[in-house]
Each structure stands twice: as C-alpha cells, then as structure tokens.
Image (cartoon, rainbow, N blue to C red; front, side):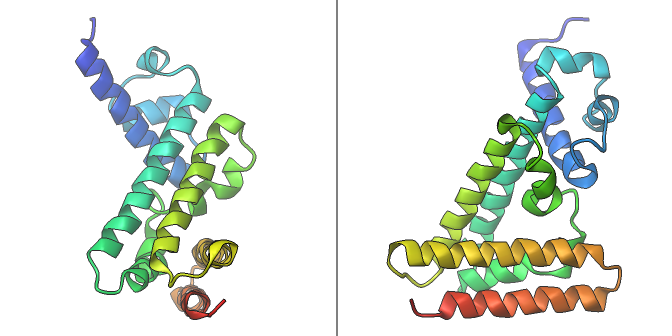
Length: 193
C-alpha cells in the first residue's frame, strides 16, 4: 500500500524521534534497525525509503536530541529568576541522572559519538557550541576567550559529573558527584577573570 507524502513525512519524524530516544538509551550500536523502527511503530521495510543508512538516521537523531537539550536549557533559564541556577539544578540532578532516554545526548552518547563518522559527530559539535552559547548568556560577562574558557570548564564538569553519577547504583554517592560539580560550576561562574 502506497503512503502519501504527508504520511511519509510523519513517519520519518516518528523514526527520528524514536531513534533519538533509543540511541541515548542503548547506544548507536546497541540497537538494530528492526527495534528502531518498531520503536516508531513502523516496520523495518520502511527504513530505506526514509533514510540512506543507519548512520544517516544516527546523524539526524543526534541533531534532534542536541536541539531538544539546548531548547530545554533555554526554557528552564527563561522561566527562572536565576537562570544559571535553574540550568545547574536541572542538569545536575538525580532526575536527570535517571533520564537516560530523554537526558543529555552528550552524556549518553558522547564517547560513542567520538568514534562515529563526521556525519554523526557534527550534530554533537553543533550542539555543544549551542550549549556553550546558552551558558555564555547566563554567566556574568568576561571579555572574549576568558568567558569561553569558563563556560567550557563548566560544561565539561557538568557532563562529566552526570556521566560518573550514572555509573554508581548508590544514590548517595551519585548525589555527591552532582553536588560537588554544582558547587564548582557556581564557583567558576562567579570567578572574576
């Protein structure tokens, strides 16, 4: 049965959204096409009508995940009297630690993305740049490269803390890593020069 162009586009978006979640949960190589398509409510046969390859889907799903994460930061910052604190509390929380399929794609797939093709790495690079832009808007202004160094250190600390916190089953230890990172991120943001 032939699918209309509009329905094909809806199906394509459903696959990208499902892959965005499923790749974060299982990794790029931890889930096959059959299960990716099943996650979107479609059959595997429809895949090659929508995407050139699994790598093509991984790149598009990565872009979608990174854009979602950046929008999430911006939304929580916009809705708070202390935007930077709101981002810190959202990101360095046990709730985020548990959000494997909807959490930060850098945490979930960063080391895996580093081993992928340029096509898959570019959405991560763009997403990291967008995260840094959000942080730069929230951190008290410093001139040029110094502010960028601060935000790079802050993002690195945040991503590392969530990554490490996910390794531990013990919530108390996980929380200690998140709290330590939050304290350091605040200190870096407040530091002059």
